[in-house]
Length: 359
Ligand code: NAD
Ligand code: DAU
Image 1 (tube, rainbow, N blue to C red):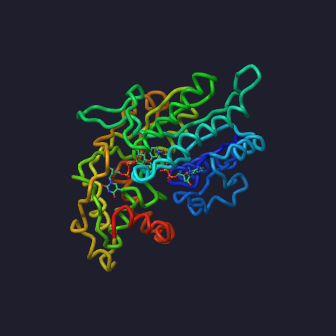
Image 2 (cartoon, helix red, strand yellow):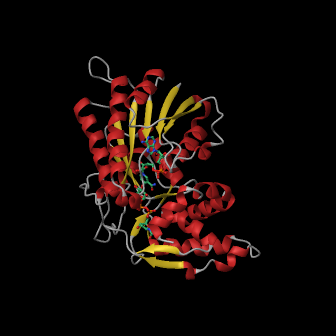
Image 3 (cartoon, rainbow, N blue to C red):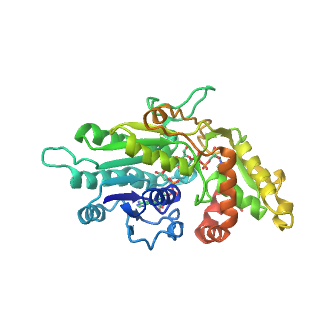
């Protein structure tokens, strides 16, 4: 039975990935989710899975060398899928240190634990033992010319403390592959959206504010472009890279779905107005009047756009969810899971929001 160690599985993409692999492989795999449950980690995201006999949650920090060593010692882990990270650019601008600690040192620690468990006396590694490092398109920097894209060969040019920390972690994984023949892949993905995303990120924040009749804060001129991918498509891409990709390779994952921020915000407003029943009292206050332009993010990258040619050619992956369908599914999910939103926005979120956006 193959055992997956998923790090950061209580977060947004990690929990969607665990749902995806359990849905796909059922009881034929074991899943161990290691997560330190920062503000972004929420066991509620896996409430429907936690009682399964092939799922185990381990509350630990990836920076804890002894805890990671024990995990590998006590479990015959074949696959590591490494999501655990500090992931929010705005937080990295306010407090870079923890990004270096978790994203760089935590990744190094995990690599060391996996290598110690997997490397054989002759320096080789057993078959079907793989480490997949989940990274971001932000490591490539910002595109200034139209019709240009990020390829796997694009030079790294990170600008935020977040993207610099992810770039460092990517380089560390590359170094382990080149130096020790460590069996790994790196995936660099564009902006994800979908269920269970914490409302500090653009799409869930805007949905939540619109429903509450609060200002919808758009940074700068609202014309920055991101390449949006439905989270399940990302999860399938990660799975296909492990199943069909070549070891030691990097794969870019993205859906050729470039949109500027202001268009995303307007789509959320119009979709909410369309979906909400006429007798829902919130409908009256959801309009473009809520859009509020605020001070720009420092060092704000202008445009990201992924060229997914390699993953398409080598694994057959393509984004199955059109944005129009994905955003509807996402908005419906948030409408059907208002208790989830209430839980994650009570407490510490209030303080974060006040510090970030003012009263
Ligand atoms: P998230 O912030 O929603 O979740 C991160 C998870 O990691 C949380 O459950 C948190 O508790 C856990 N974690 C944080 N520090 C930890 C530590 N020291 N030890 C153990 N667990 C820890 O993030 P996400 O949006 O799901 O992103 C997951 C990964 O995917 C990250 O590596 C991110 O860089 C990458 N990524 C994200 C996107 C995106 O659009 N969200 C796109 C491309 C790549
Ligand atoms: O590109 C992949 C990256 O996408 C991931 O590596 C990151 O983990 C993930 O957080 C995301 O980063 P972004 O900075 O692109 O996502 P965010 O949702 O924070 O912002 C998206 C865009 O919306 C960005 O141009 C900033 C803008 N924005 C964001 C917020 C939160 C606003 O205009 N207003 C807001 O309130």
